[in-house]
Image 1 (tube, rainbow, N blue to C red):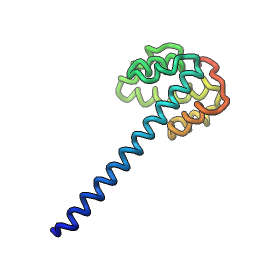
Image 2: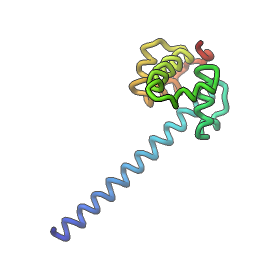
Image 3: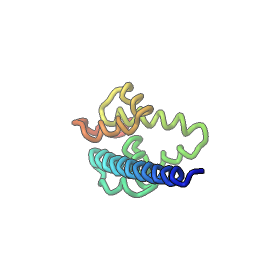
Image 4: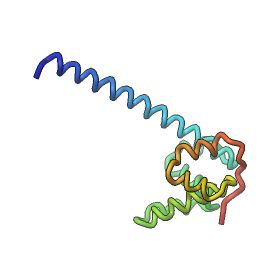
Length: 127
């Protein structure tokens, strides 16, 4: 292999991995900000969105009224059905219809950002 080609390939790989790392970091920071806002809309402290597992507990408490529902995510196969139901309930908890819940299922990052930044009001857990 040609030495110059090998060095060019390494440089391109380094630049590409650096760019993808920066993009990943920015998307993660945006997601943290979005969940912080969603928690605050529901009357919970935003910092609770930063703690692993506890944020899931609080999110399920916001959506279902009971944080222990997060353990349904551990049941194989049923966790898929539960994810769909959770997203539909999330839409209703913030005053949206089922179509918005379908958006949450397929494009959660976009639709969660809509919930975080629009004028919707948290209406409480849906039973």
